[in-house]
Image (cartoon, rainbow, N blue to C red; front, side):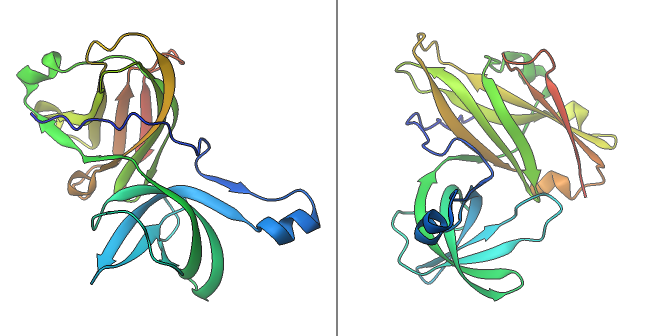
Length: 221
């Protein structure tokens, strides 16, 4: 099974999602309102726009940059975007000014044979937040990184796919990386293929060091 390697450079935007507003009227006039979140890239004839869902229950908005997007981002790829709204085109379409954008770790849910599950690495990480938006499960976390690339996967045991609960596990491998410094990272996993099955609940297992509990639950619709 192929492991996607995590990017090990630090992410500058640590709070997600969040809104930054200036304290005074003069500062607000200068800086405006900024947003940061994980969004999906959509490319058409070389033009890029983004779909953005603030919460799982919110409808998706389409964001159109007012300037050329730098970077080689593929259609359907998830990225971390900081932006400022410029113009409301209609209820769910906006023009935006990009402040910053970064690639993140993006993958899909993988089904693993039952006898292979015990062989998967299960190293700890420091989970900061986890949330679901539509077809995506998103995580913000820290890993103790020194010099060797880590890997991370979202997996499901093929023998556990029945019933009304989709049971998935986040598996992290340190790759025997020595102790180093805490690096902030983001992951987004596409769960569309399984979300549309007759499941009502998503159960996520995370081997985290900062809390005693290891399970999170989300409604599926």
